[in-house]
Length: 372
Ligand SMILES: O=C(O)CCC(=O)C(=O)O
Ligand SMILES: [Fe+2]
Image 1 (tube, rainbow, N blue to C red):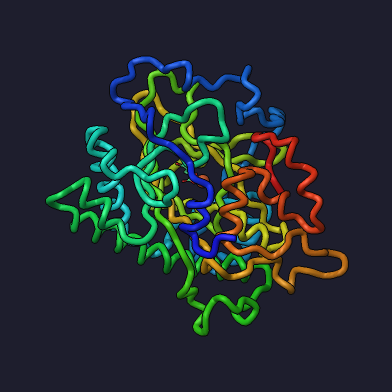
Image 2 (image 1 turned 135 degrees about the vertical axis):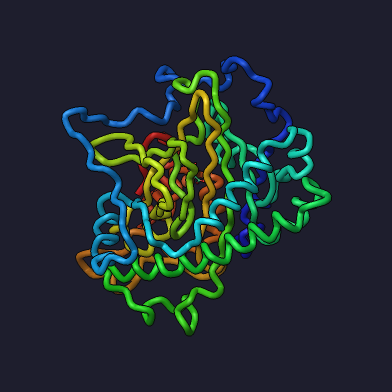
């Protein structure tokens, strides 16, 4: 059983590099990138009820005195919301975006110097979820877990320190915001600091782990047939996503279908991840989401993937369990969950459902089905 985050990935290597494309050289969408409804793994065949017009994804002002209730409602009914007045200086978000842009604009051979090795977490490469789909995604990404120094030195032999500083500052701010959001999300369920022993003596989640995921979706010659990042839920407690001004993120709203989350100036998207789904005993569903691409514009997004210390057992919080609400999931560490996700992808939550009925479901794997 993996005891560290990196061990979870080492146990499930994903070989991503041999055919890494240079998107700038492709004038037409190759067949291997064409996602169509004819393919059974096309992940966007929602049960779409066109008679129901969706409300927009909630936008919550963190200075609003009702923020706690609004967050609770958003988590329960959407599993996602946007926040404004979150306290992260715009300059930090802009500088991080600029580092991302600089990185992805480099020639392919330069980026490949920082390739993520098959059994590692950090580095440049395709989407980690790629092996679960027969079609390729119009996407490139760079994951930072721990220090980016080694990779950044390869990419920018001269000015790597500048970019390392940007990422470090971004991560520091994001971790602060993430801890605040976790308490708001749990607080809206009546959970107090003393109910979460791994939050640390000050309740500041000092031992929490996080990774930064830079996502890049180059302009695409045939965006209606392409997929940026296929439908998935995040294996986190929560994810904070910054998107540049180009729209692309969509979330699945039950009974409605895919709903676009439009970028709002200064706003950040907050996703409920699988581990919060578990902690909340299913009250807050992890949100199924995907990213679409654009014909003329390059899109960048930056995700802060926030989780607990790697070895803490995560299970439905005792306050949310009762004889009428038995625990839906067994206890699991983040490392172990990442290993389960790497193996079973969107079936991971049902695999750890309690009592262990999930194993029987493994064979009817269907990527379009929301788990949990
Ligand atoms: O680019 C986006 O909008 C989504 C990114 C995402 O889902 C992720 O990084 O997990
Ligand atoms: Fe995601």
